Length: 90
Image (cartoon, rainbow, N blue to C red; front, side, top):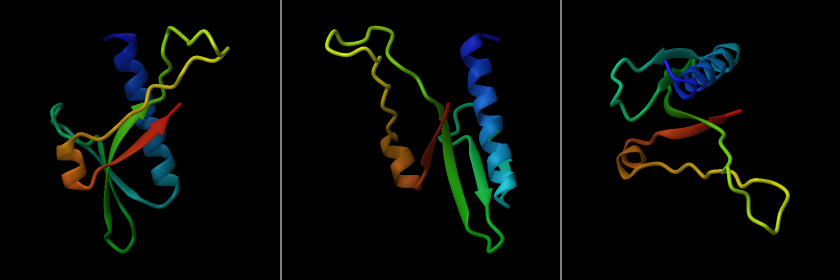
């Protein structure tokens, strides 16, 4: 398993813990091609679908700043159509 996939799995589990602490029921996707990673259901039955992304920064920072720029994450058209939300985890 690559360090990138380990980092992603750890991030997903951090989000799962937070959602559970917030009172949600949480299920993970089993299909690697699934457009979302998690489904969270609140006590009223409202479902939210999440794509979990680990915060990443560009390796080559611009010359005008001391900080590297954060890589922006966007939903695919399919994810937008399905109402999926991105959760970023550090």
